[in-house]
Image (cartoon, rainbow, N blue to C red; front, side):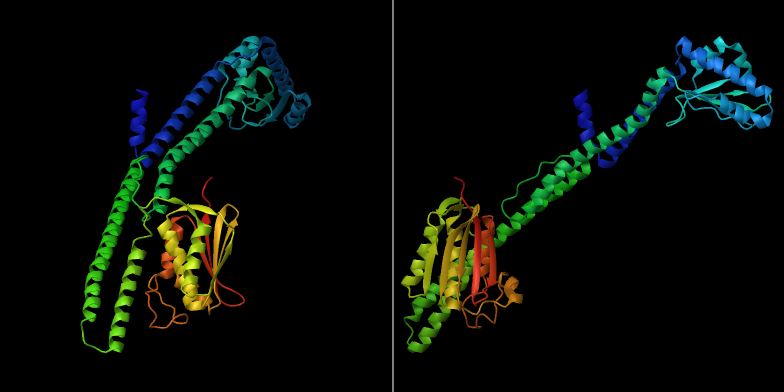
Length: 441
């Protein structure tokens, strides 16, 4: 029965849940007040406490009724004590307490029947008050004698009244917290899924929570699937185009050897074909996202960077390496090798030289690649990381490439939870810094 009730509550929407919480709080409030009223009505004091109240009221009533009207307030103050205070007021509308002590009134009247003629009224005092029990007696001239007293036995009623005021509020806070917690729990899953949106195969979020949250999660899952399918279709299309273009380019190169043309024209056409091949390969590398389907491996970053620098040096480039040996990361080797290779080639091409330093940086690995070239204008550094952007100040229009070198680097580094930082060196040249997390031991 309890499980079916919880299942019904889970299927309720957020407005219905709020209404259910408010109804439950209202029911608890009614029950608490009903219990309090019953306890107040049936409340009685010990015999000696009841006799004290009765005797004080009889004595005060007689003394004040015999005194002139202008002296009655002073007499009431004179008869008051710390535990039993009196207050006289001229004829006025009588206000009775909301929590009447019916049994205690009967108990006091039984002790002093004369008080019944004064229509004695007793009630539980407001919080805070001059005592915990109050009341009034109607004098013969319709004036009122009000009194307040402290009764040790009435503390339970006071506690009950406090609980009747606090309990619904505490319950409302607890239920509101539980409601928000159960509502926000699936929302956290939605937030996590939106952060990963478009970064890989979709991870469906379980449909939990109220109807509105379930609809949101269902729409998010559908959107994830559509975006992923769109990216897959785009990737496959671009890779297919690149693959298909390589075939006619290869045929053009073969036919070029058979055409009777001058060496300068042949060299120009060959250069154009090579540039087209490089453009196609760079587009494929960018679209391929560094091979996200390839599993990560432990890579000795120091050896990889040193090998790339040595290869560049073997081709006649001004390339130097220094760094800490044995720095190991866990990443996709093809993507990281391509990223380092792009940065080294850029430094050699635009700066004329390259210096590579691999070192440990806290709990991460840091690769610093520097050159002595013109650098990048400060206001264009962000543009340099955008795909298909060519910086005129850094390269001429006839330079090969489509502006995908740095975007490929950034995409590969981000896929490994790393960062790429580009900034100009104060002494001239560009400094590219890659930070990657170290492999767990």
